[in-house]
Image 1 (spheres, chains in turn purple, brown):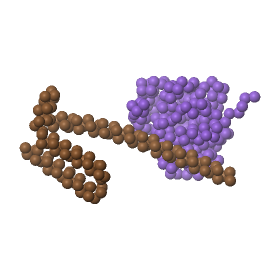
Image 2: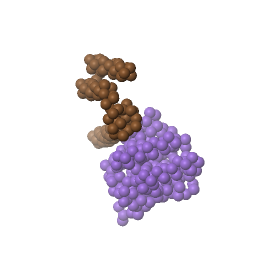
Image 3: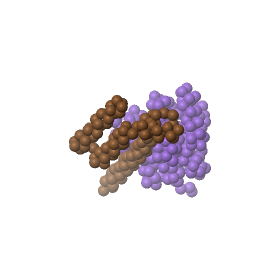
Image 4: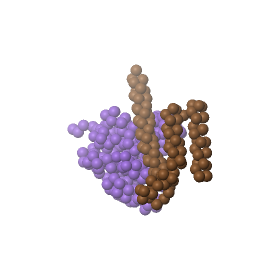
Length: 224
Length: 116
């Protein structure tokens, strides 16, 4: 009989008091442990996550999403996780798609799985993102990092213990998505893309975030 | 000549200010020496501006010496800003490391507390 794998869900959260309760409830049954990395929220994110039974790691200074994910990964590895998956705290991902994202790793077909909103037509991607921001991000990823995945900026991903140990997220900001894609390619990890649905709300990436990501990637390339 | 005298007065203002800053202990000795040398070099450039003009012309530049000094100054500033950016990037990463370690340590301390 196959040995049961320990699955840990990492949720980076910053001021997510409105959605964090539902998100934790939704993922609870699909992970052995739910870890919320509270990135110095000014609202009740921490209290709500604790009351919902999640393991809460607190950043005393806001360090942004990439830093929170690395903290979560580090903790998950220290707890002996076999599989780690990242899930956004704002409710933009669907918990009933978690098994689809985990499956390739659990079946030993992949080291890392990326959710992609572009592999199906379920996500109603806003016009500017669909036709300007994401195509631009793809071009930047291709030209500067040499990677071409269908979704350059999806926060829904899963990775095996081995992959998480090798993939150190150094980009504290939103450029971590591109960094993970780049390192996956560089380390020769077996990657699979799985269609996921992204539910859009008002808190997603803005144009200025896109500019920041490109700036961070350029600087990352200059220094590495 | 009038321009040189004016430039000297400007320099004099900064040098006097530098001494006041040192007396008020607003800057360290190293900083004081650095800026004193900097303004010293600037005054040399003013005194020998004609020689610099001739030197710059001998190098094949069409502009006057002061123009070349400004170009060099801008290039130096770009370099310093880049250095500063790298330093800030490193500091930023170190802050993240500290914040991360603290969050993990606090968690493990709590876990140990719960076990007792």
